Image (cartoon, rainbow, N blue to C red; front, side, top):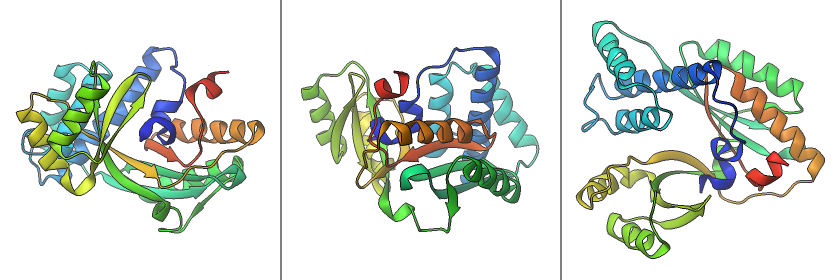
Length: 243
């Protein structure tokens, strides 16, 4: 699940200053624009699953509802052009990194990511060289549920498995069945939209020195404006990062 491979769940919580909050809002704004664009202009989150997931992310980071509404109104009035590009990379100690971006200029983004990788002991690789080691899945967060309740919900909505991270259970879902799973979840009284993740088919353990280099690389990548999410096949915990 995302607990060990999704950088958003590995990194330590940074101080919630205005700059950090503004950067998070910017990422989500790009995701909302892309979701509407990919949905053929559909601005109804009940009909556009990707938009529903983006709005849920906005709620999680306390992005004001009026900000979301203004953004959607602006998109209705003029054409916004965003593209999702997933880059593949090999980092220090040969670890794999999947870099999900949303950009209005893929050439610029590629150049900036390439520089970051080269300066931090890694390199971008050709399409397919890394992604075959990951599965694209959905995860649905079940806050306040026991293991028994999580298992029951997983069975009800067609989940593949449940996993636990920081005391919270997640249902792992097949990518192709996300819409169906969401409909079943809503019928069961669960309104939370699933999140897309790239889960490694296997993970690797690396020594402390290499781990710090990987963490530095991930932090540098995260600072790049177009990067939305990062996934890796490294097996390490939040505690190791915060130590």
